[in-house]
Image 1: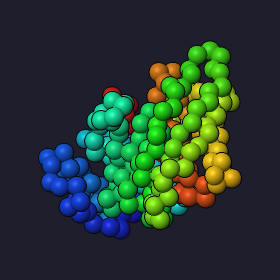
Image 2 (image 1 turned 90 degrees about the vertical axis):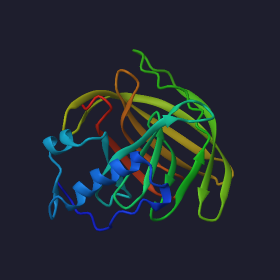
Image 3 (image 1 turned 180 degrees about the horizontal axis):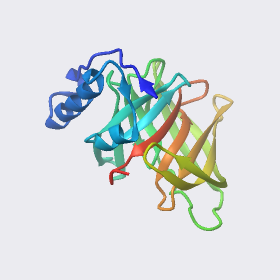
Image 4 (image 1 turned 60 degrees about the vertical axis):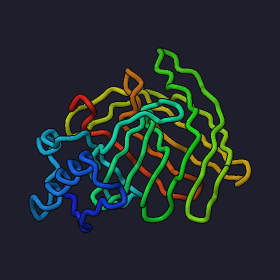
Length: 219
């Protein structure tokens, strides 16, 4: 598969920390290393950072690298901040998208991520909870969601580096005030880590498919 990068890098919005300088250098290599990047297993393995494929509204995959891994200051849950070459950022917690920045249509400002851990036992049970969503543009804040998560079976997820046996879950996210709902899907390994997910940031809004291709352990 080939990824064509059309936009140059500008990280002025994020300051000039050493971490972003390092990511800048990595993405410079991705963009200018050749006319078109061959995303092979060896290419991904040789990248200095964890990476994932992201597909926005079924418009083709892009490669994003992990820019930051840090604790959410309020909940202490680990946040992963993934960055593309055109400065778009997707922030995840336990595989759930909790914030987006500079996506082309609309963005998730925040979500109250009080989701329980995935039940990866031999007989996973249904789980239910509530959350709250905020979106931009138009300051659409404070929308309550009722969420039901169900296990639907096992499935193998294949990436350029490996194949992973996973449990597959579907979440139905209902917004009573909007009389609308979305459906999110997660593929979770035996350790409870999300290795692939398909999520919408809101009803009728941007749909994202994320697949981890190189995790913290380089696999």
